[in-house]
Length: 169
Image 1 (cartoon, rainbow, N blue to C red):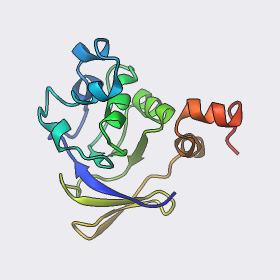
Image 2 (image 1 turned 90 degrees about the vertical axis):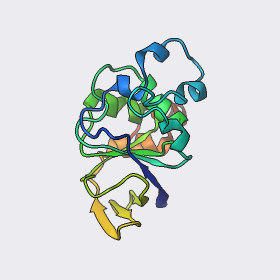
Image 3 (image 1 turned 90 degrees about the horizontal axis):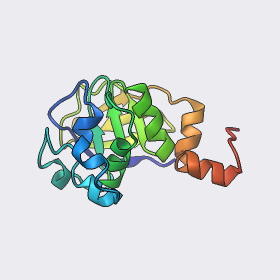
Image 4 (image 1 turned 180 degrees about the vertical axis):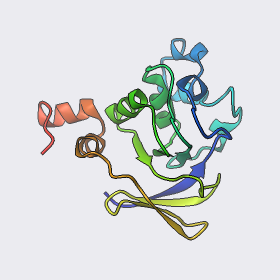
């Protein structure tokens, strides 16, 4: 996987960002079109967030990102908005799994030195994030092999179609 570059996007809340902050419950079952759903990400906590996101940007947060309900609309909405990876100190486990199931990259590392708008380069192969705006390199927590494979294949459904079942090797 080649290194990816994009801008860091922060919402103003770092820790315990729940799935209802990501996409409000009032939209989860009313909007089926993923692109339309994406227009409402973080609407209740950062009303103009969607307008700031450019395709390929990285969402940056703190501890326990994605806590709350287990609905897959939250990672789907982020991915549909153009977020190419979520970088946080830690993730709620169900959000973590739902994200990899659809092919949304989640990376765990120390995010304290990353500010909104910083230019980042993510290199999964070498295991680091380079903050190009601040000249700092941040190690990424190694990703489990099964998650790397699902991510490389574009999510669990694409993995099953490609391999005609579940194959990690």
